[in-house]
Amino acid sequence: MLHNAAIAACGLDAVYVAFPVSAGTAPDLIATAAQWGICNLNVTMPHKQSAWRACDSRSVAADALESVNTICVQEGRLIGHNTDGHGVLGALDAHVDDWSEHQVVVLGAGATSKAA
Image 1 (cartoon, rainbow, N blue to C red):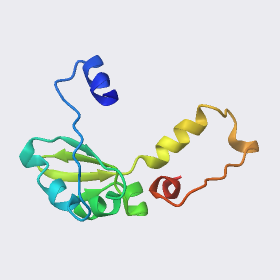
Image 2 (image 1 turned 180 degrees about the vertical axis):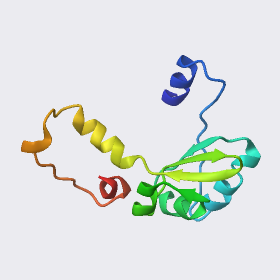
Image 3 (image 1 turned 180 degrees about the horizontal axis):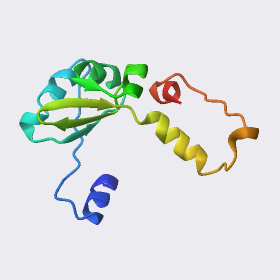
Image 4 (image 1 turned 90 degrees about the horizontal axis):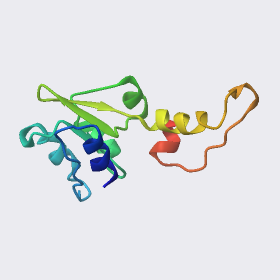
């Protein structure tokens, strides 16, 4: 609902749809994205690593993490990105003006904490 509200507010001709994906089937679904007219995908755990492998090319951050949470379909090619680190930093930057005197502890072992 949140994504579709943002899409509508921007006046875009698009819809955000969730696909339930069983373990091990993400690469097959991702490979058919362009055939279904899907222009972008976001990927959640536990599929981020298999999504990384399914992409034709990847951003530097995605390759460093071997994890993809966003896929853009461009001319039939799957371009993988990882925006988890940017999301964490954006959330922290909203509360801290000067990082020179602060330390951060990241608790967890998932893909987002690895990106952070």
